[in-house]
Image 1 (tube, rainbow, N blue to C red):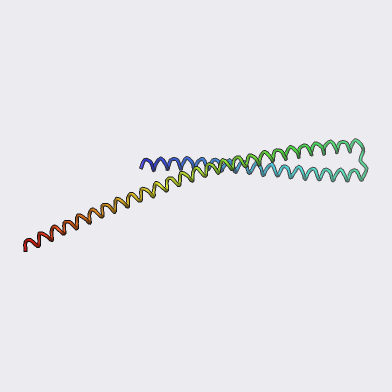
Image 2: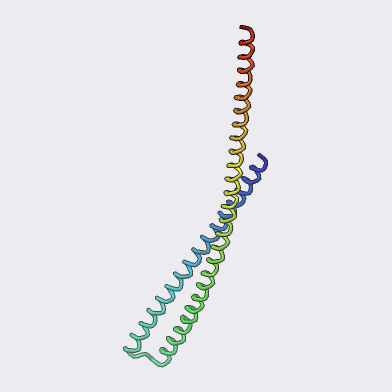
Length: 156
């Protein structure tokens, strides 16, 4: 029974670990989604700003105004490139967390398998003990009947 309790403790600890890694994976996935949304917003903002620049060019934009647009578009492009790097890192982080979760889940499943095997062995031992007790009872009962039968024949 102590062994069973130790296995149950290991299963509980492994389950908590799985839960923690699942939580961390969820956080990594939400962070990644947020990062992708930021990139989408940056790309949309850049497109809107470039369209506005085109409109201003067609209506007559000063050289200084055009340079300001170019400088700002370059800053947006740098921000977009930086956000793409952040997305690469967050995708990598998801993979690291997913692997950690899968490893913890395999460990928990191994403990479950050990517990199941231990339970099956205990049940088999109980069945064997019960069968042995039943056999011994049947043998004793059979021996007693033979003994009683011999005594009853000898007295007749």
